[in-house]
Length: 164
Image (tube, rainbow, N blue to C red; front, side, top):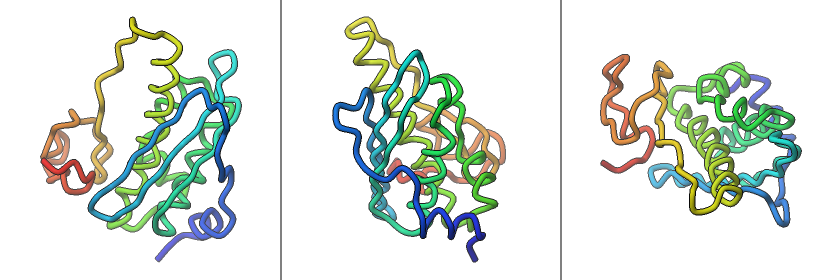
């Protein structure tokens, strides 16, 4: 059911923990499955120097958090912002369809940590980028409030736990 890479990241997760005094913190949860993820980042010269996470959830959620943390470390904020659920699932050599929402949570938690950092750095003048939602079936970017994917037409709101 799970790839060897998923099992490796579940059994030996990388970058677990908390960064005290983190430059950015992002927390997400999915009320449908109960998974909770918090990402902490340290940023130096526009690059993610360190990243840690805490995840309460299933094996796939832990593996996803571990993989996202590895994918983000050493990347610029712009590069890390481009990490999508599809890229995470591919790096893990696939996830079962019913666990694809976990890959969205991992990417979302990282993106929230980056937004938190930017908000702290830029203060009152900061304008957050509009929240994006990626279809768990075809990875097309959709508005956050979308209930159906603009690419494949499949219903997506339940997959993300948006509760429309």
